[in-house]
Image (cartoon, rainbow over all chains, first blue to last red; front, side):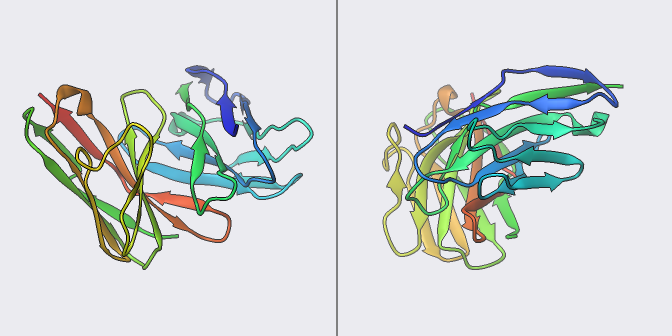
Length: 113
Length: 114
């Protein structure tokens, strides 16, 4: 079936460190892929997206590339800040559905000053 | 992107009572979704709410416990009925919008049941 697997958290980094949060998926067809972020006490915000193989989504210094050969969509940022502390969710569009998403478990990121 | 508001933002309720959560969108949308997010967990889809038709519930969720209304293309409500402490969660409303199946979320309703 269709599923999303994220690396377990929490991930703890120092400010200005390089960030990678792994996300792999299984899916039929060609889903769109998303990263959402949830800051403490808030709802989810769409961070970035990619709709086809080799697309790179980017926003706020974060990037992720749609890799069909490895079925991955890893989130990266070159230099994290304390304000990036949040929970990050990887998701894919459910094939054959209107707007339904399949969610990863979420990865909590803690950035220490 | 759509702007979504939810009311109430948080509530503390007694077991056995019911709470209705409102979701308002600033534009007309076809697809609206209701999720539950238990503490430290991912999102679990409760139901999909389409205007003019019955909501479609996911496995494990039933209409008697989570009745949903969708009277028009900008508004929906979710009721959590006969609450127990296990219903303590964040309840999130989202809408489908845009050309690539993305969803946009409201700020959530934080429910505590005593």
